[in-house]
Length: 63
Image (cartoon, rainbow, N blue to C red):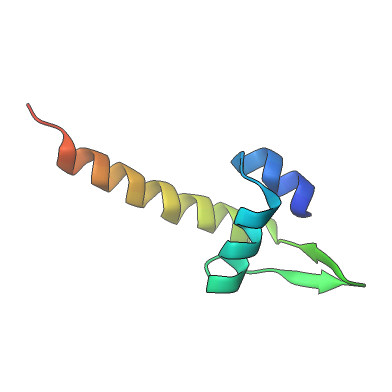
């Protein structure tokens, strides 16, 4: 999966992906200067990011 694919999937910009790579939360590799992401790494990234969002939302819910 390349930058364009992941931008569309996550609905974020290229700069956001650069930031994720820079802080080490999104594993990647390069081939001939082009950035790629493994599908399993993307799935794990989504799972952990959305788990954090769901936990925070659950704490804010009032019943």
